[in-house]
Image (cartoon, rainbow, N blue to C red; front, side, top):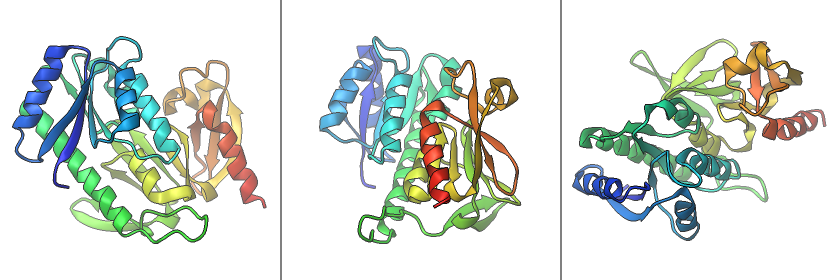
Length: 276
């Protein structure tokens, strides 16, 4: 990728000015600030008419905060729409866990050092390059079938060795902090990436059941309602699920994964489809 196109979102004019200066001072990767926004609403309006690669996003702003804005982008990913990558830039470290649940590439605290911003943007450039390569190698869709944007293997680094895991063997991917766990029937591997990227690459063979979990449709054994204390608090159940929580049980490993309420209907549909 030649130039990263950046949108700066912060309610403080001086903070936006400083971020613009830092971005423009970075020699590699090359970046260009296309626009600035003072609120999440302004940013969303701009993105409806324009495109960018990266959003440098503050958290605490008037109206919809940065986390709500990023959550809206996550819904666009779930709908299969292209979205920019997110790097949070904020004075408060308390929201870091929530930010990574939303698949943020990085979380920078103010005052931002140029080296940290450069490292975050380099990760964005790498991720976008991998996305472009996956799309370039994708087979053409047949009829109305969804395009699969990845070959049949996931390449991982395991103690200095490269290993290819067949996608057909993957039961689920689960996001935890900055990393994603890949689970097969016999092994677990840690990936450095985001669920949103995997979701786009793997197509409809996998189903997002929660912000932190992507499961193979064939590997879902059952859907069941549970008391939240049985697994929801440990697996990051949605805060709004105060009375009951839902979970799916996976084949081979006999594990339960939390399901957000908004995804329960999709899981039911997937299970019904397996029985046809």
